[in-house]
Image (cartoon, rainbow, N blue to C red; front, top):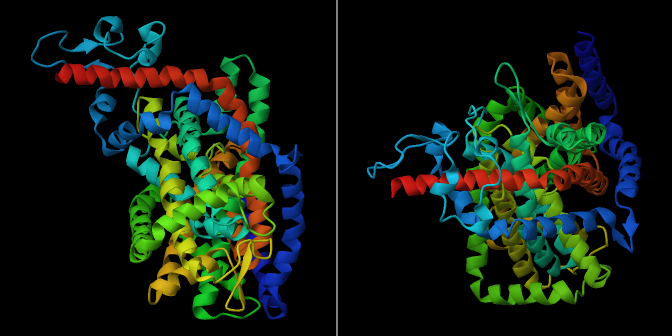
Length: 560
């Protein structure tokens, strides 16, 4: 009860102060208070090694390592991932370890827990060979979980497909020029392998509560998995560090950065100039998000499975229309992207390394591969095979970065063939267009407006939908981490949700620079503890992948 009173007191105290100071610039006051916090964390997380942020080196090395170690799963299992989302292998999930053979009469009703699989999988590729006793590798598990494969993917995609795809891409191009697009795509393709590993582990080591509620993510595979390896203390420490930074990013990149960009386009659409406009927009968004997140992961899944496809199709449709209307410039745009990727001309980007870092940084912020956050959502899937959800998860960076980010980049680059702004801008992400300063989603909005009448209304709707869907998903990620640290009581949940909603308002009121710097620091900070788990536990992922692919192979043999 004391947590409840404390939460209510904090919430209403913020609003009381706001009401008194709106006229003297509450937006500016919030930004001034938040900026030092942002700078502090940014300076700590992005320390350099040989002039390059070490966290980016770690991210790129791990993505490359997992891509090679698992035989390019980002390409090799792409179609199988789509088939899993479509439900083609649902009968394997429903019947567990039972494979019912067809009319050939061979081993009709074989229980894979009791029969040596080797006689049935002679045609399997070497990389699919089952290692060890079949009882250890294929077992009849309960199909615990709260969501389907599609719902889990939609929830996770809604947490990554957000204003990083609209504002983040614009920021990357404004700073690094068209070449940043190339490195964003490279990072997205390699990140598919990392996402596969972390989401497989998320399902493998999840906790199932007595009421059927699922608790998963890096916190659990760090504690459980490293304990299995004999590093229990290291696992606990890494899990706590991850949970702290995950909560931080649920307030930052998954929340404040989203409300910040939604506020930018809303203020522009309605021409709001008040010193407290951002604050009040934040209040409205906080109420909307609060109504949804109170319902928990099932409510979130129900919303995201409807909103995300509609949102993505609507936005991509507009991008395709703009790019198609300028089809003669498509080859010029790709040529410019390739040339600028290796010989950038953007002012102040710092040459080849500079544009590479800009592209990788924005892609990692957008798709979060390596941060481990998506495994929290994927952990709630209904499945008996952890690798099945790992394969589903590898689609995430492809959708987010390779498709949506690339389309946004093409729109902006084609728009700027008209010479509207200078790549590099002011060095902080803002550019001058028609004598006015634009940043983030404002740049994308300007590009859309050039080709689509009333696109300011359309893009405002898209940005707000992107923002809200990301916030509701990240509220779940943060709450799971909060529960890990402070327990699973209702009072603790309420404290978190109140703080989360307060950060919606802070993000709407503060300056884009400080909000995004804090958000970058939080999402990249999660990479450090998460990688501890991935490098210790990737052999488990290989074993689970073999197990799932062997079951699919047996199903095909049974049908044939």
